[in-house]
Length: 213
Ligand SMILES: Cc1cc2nc3c(=O)[nH]c(=O)nc-3n(C[C@H](O)[C@H](O)[C@H](O)COP(=O)(O)O)c2cc1C
Image (cartoon, rainbow, N blue to C red; front, side, top):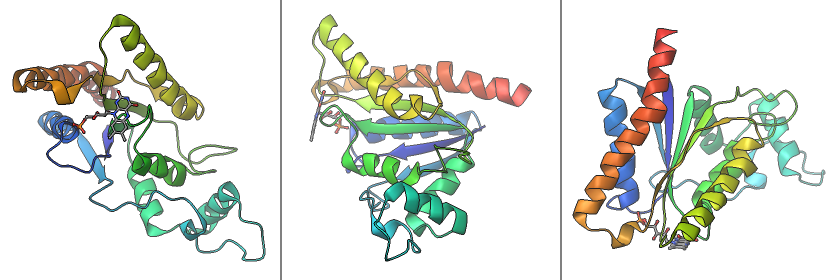
């Protein structure tokens, strides 16, 4: 069992990083191997385009998915992409740690999805990546009522389905920390504790099953 942690937040002192560090603490304690992609720290370029691959024929109309398939078959992805694909390929579970921005991923993480989960690698005919598990750990600015909580849950289910449902991965329940910027230190400590419990229930249990198999 190996985990790939992708964190998308510009501030190491943020609650997102507190959650990310909690995941690392739990994995270390359980002796579970992991890789980290700290997208801001890596200065990850999120803009998919012609610089993603080195060999798309200059005379052809550029098509991203076609360029990605060609790059995969000829080992000609930009390093920033192939390094991420290697981390992903060697892992069983991907965890995205991010703040909800405009009901979606921060741009840097959306760009990671566009560029790293490439055609022929993560999806499409004969994709080479075997389906993994995915878990989101999200912070939000809300929610204040039962209706709002449901609204968030539906939005987040959509964010899962449109990507990882589409490519056939196993979706684990998201950990959602609502309204974190308005929480007291005590409430934040409790949230980190419930994240540990969420990981124990959804991730650690799996790793025990895998290591006993
Ligand atoms: C550009 C931007 C867009 C945001 N969009 C949403 C949103 O759609 N829904 C929401 O609940 N909160 C939204 N927020 C609030 C953030 O989710 C919230 O500030 C963040 O999760 C707090 O975590 P942090 O303290 O680790 O940054 C947005 C914040 C920013 C800066």
